[in-house]
Image (tube, rainbow, N blue to C red; front, side, top):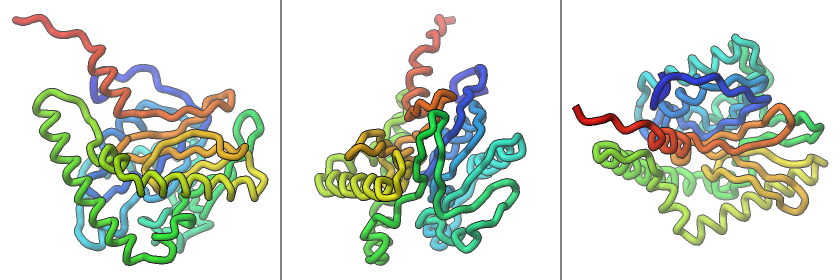
Length: 267
């Protein structure tokens, strides 16, 4: 069963890109991601950083059955023949000590170059290297992480109330972030810097994560694509067989499928 009914025919993609799952935190929507992973097949699966949240697990342990299920499903894809590449981010930087290794069919790399079906080349990286706060002022990054954790806690309680009232998931924390002018400016600087890095390497575009902001837009002749996250927006980036890319908003699709369900007649 899916979250809202019987499993339909699996969606088939050439490649799927996921990042910022933050397993090990209460804010991770591992339940949504597990549902997504059950319903797709792909030739290539890129895990674009912050899959496991080592920062949070160092402070307090949290791990539930949904987190286990996500890992099992990723390994199931690898066993089924999907080429899985894991690019560690700043929250799971401990895995950067294993770069170049392959563990249970999952290859670890600092970055990758993905060639689309139509011959375009995309630089794939987490993106924290271009976040000056994370790179040069780690104590500020950790402070910001604590504030962000508080926002996610509010988001979790907010959605608990919504669910009890019969409403679907909606990200309060993401809405709050978008109201802050400084955050919007920082996102723009980050996107511009990543696009410039791709251009410098002669790539057609860049695929990244890190800032929890799903986006697909052209910047100076380079296609910038961010696959978003599974804490706030529950989004993934997918490439179709013809080389076309699509941002998938899984939470929004669940809302739409819920509203499409027939209303039961009163007994």
